[in-house]
Length: 136
Length: 111
Image 1 (tube, rainbow over the protein chains, first blue to last red):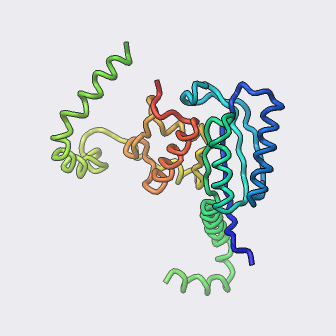
Image 2: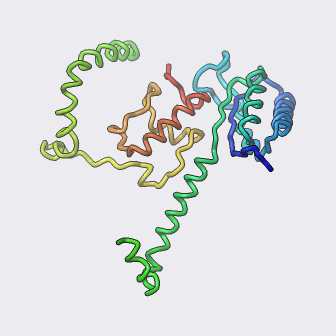
Image 3: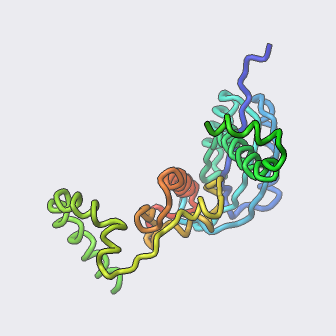
């Protein structure tokens, strides 16, 4: 029995801009292993590259944005956040839970799709018979 | 220079109307909407929610371009009455802007 609740999370964090490329790669690799060790499955890791920060963070004006998408439970996220808080190369991070939002979007998409389909279907008598009870 | 005049006017601006604003708000808002705009000779184009029209369901904090359009020069969230965004979308929009601020994609206060 899998008791852990796996959810989709998205962790965006900013890495110091003055690191060598190898160092950042190393940092990301260790972070990923930590995540998997904590029981999370990394789905994607997306480097946005250097970006100007909207405000100074730890006296840095720019930073390397990285977006990490993963399947995890709350405990794994907690552990990952703790690691990031400790790592001094990481200036800032934000974790966003995605699954509820994705479900919502899925729902909207379905409703949209059914609305688009309806007009051409109306021409057939079977659909016409079906439609009135729905509206009434 | 421009900043100084701005700062000078903003603190003095909201404060005096704050009292009369409570009273003034209600009668203002009732007829002040679309009905009155027609009565006066102003023709105000009816604003529509951008997100409803363009069918943008996902207001994401990562989409800085999109969010920037709903943020004033100083970084404030532009109110609904100015942008015409509908209530559900404004709610999501403001949440997205706040997230973006948290990760330094948008400023809390510009300059």
